[in-house]
Every structure is written in C-alpha cells, then in structure tokens.
Length: 152
Image (tube, one colour):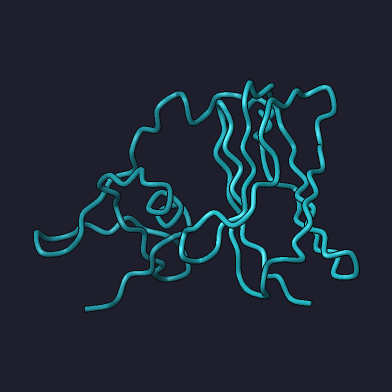
C-alpha cells in the first residue's frame, strides 16, 4: 500500500479546526486523481465552509491595554513601568511582587485617565534585593502582569 501525501488545503483545514471528511488526492502518473478508499482507509470530503470564513475582514483592530515596557535604572535605583491604557480606570493598583507572591512594593494606587495613552510610573527600589519580581497592574477593567529581573 502506498502512503498518501496530504495536500496543503487538507493540512490548512486540519490546522484551523474545520476538519470534515475529505477525499485524499494522490499524485499518480503526473496528474492528480481522486482515489477511492476502503473502510479501513481514511475517507474524507472537502467541507462546505460557512459564509463567515469568507467575509471581508475588518481592518481596524481594537487596541488592548498593555504593559509597554519595564525599565531599570541601576544608577538611581529606579524602576519605571510604562503602561498603555485604552480606557479610563476608576481605580488602578500597580504593585511589585516577589516570587513567593508577597507584595514588596506599591508603585501606584489611584485613578488613571486616558488623556495621555502611555504613562510612566516610577518607584525607588533601593531597599529590594536582586532577583526576579512580578509587576502586577490591576484596574477596574484590566489585569496585566509582567516579570522583571533586578540586577545591579
């Protein structure tokens, strides 16, 4: 029995999860032929994709709030967290946690508006030892986290 090669369309449909029975196409004598299969072989047919797969994609992508960057200034022992927000937050907590889950530093607490979309929050970290920490941003509609390694 010859091994059948899977064509790129079948592979693509497998990857996107639209997998229905598909007839395998084998290359024989220089051209493609549909091969009939027996019960113990895989017999497949191309699925009818729903209309939603062919709709025009909307080019506008809704931005999400995110941590843009975390900068460590070792000369001043300052940690700066840069955050981009897409909507106003009635309350926001930006904190630094150690790897045991203990809050070791509060960076900011209070409301944040989106008048300026990217904001910097700075805190002095001279009292913290070197190591791996988690920066946590929690707001009225957001939850973000990122890691930072403090090394002087």
